[in-house]
Amino acid sequence: MPATDHDGARGAAFFDLDGTLVPFNSGMRFARYEHRNKRIGNLSLAQSAVWMLLYHLSLVDMTRAFGRAVAYYRGVAEADLDARTRTWFEQEIVEHLLPGARTAIAEHRAAGRPLVLLSSTSSYLARAAQDSWGFDDWLANRFPTDDNGRLTGDFARPLCYGPGKVELARRWAADHGVDLARSWFYSDSFSDVPMLAAVGHPVVVLPDPRLRRHAKKVGWPIARWS
Ligand SMILES: [Mg+2]
Image (tube, rainbow, N blue to C red; front, top):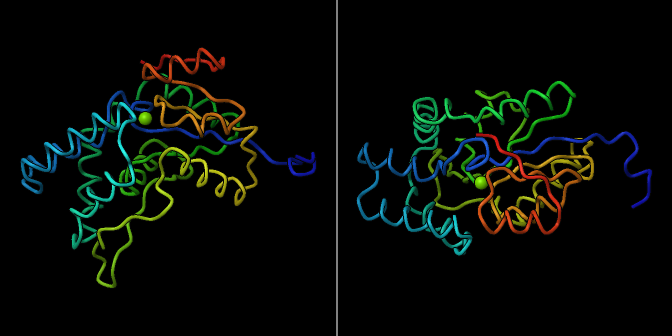
């Protein structure tokens, strides 16, 4: 790439959320919360558990799994889902930010780098996390609504997952004068290898076994944030 492309471009710090900023998968917790509050039934909870397991093993076709989960919310008022996601986040998630994550966030902030959540979670969770943890922006999955503000049961493409994360991050970087080659990305998951490979400073956090093996092979640093 010509040097002029990088003149003045700064680095950003991108962070995965599930298993990276917090030591668990928030999707499963949200499914249990919805189940406790009688918004989803036993079958959906069981399906969520199976998907989460497959997701964890990177064995699931995420676009298909995501499509089925989102279709369940067709007709739900976005404002309601947004409000209850925020309540749930404040009750069950916010306090679990890992100490090492807090330190990394503070260091990047002190260095003047933009802090960006890059997560396959919902836009609702991403916004709540941005507000509580002091991120500058977020990239996550968005759900279109109809004229009455109700979810259509679909999701925006590309899915913010795997190679889709790279596509969304590249777009964001271009819009914000950021160079991915000068940027950081922190993740726990093998599914994030494309984005880890796209930045100049990949950092693997609490990695799953496949990612740990890959990180050792290619020489990516492995951080312990617990
Ligand atoms: Mg993760």
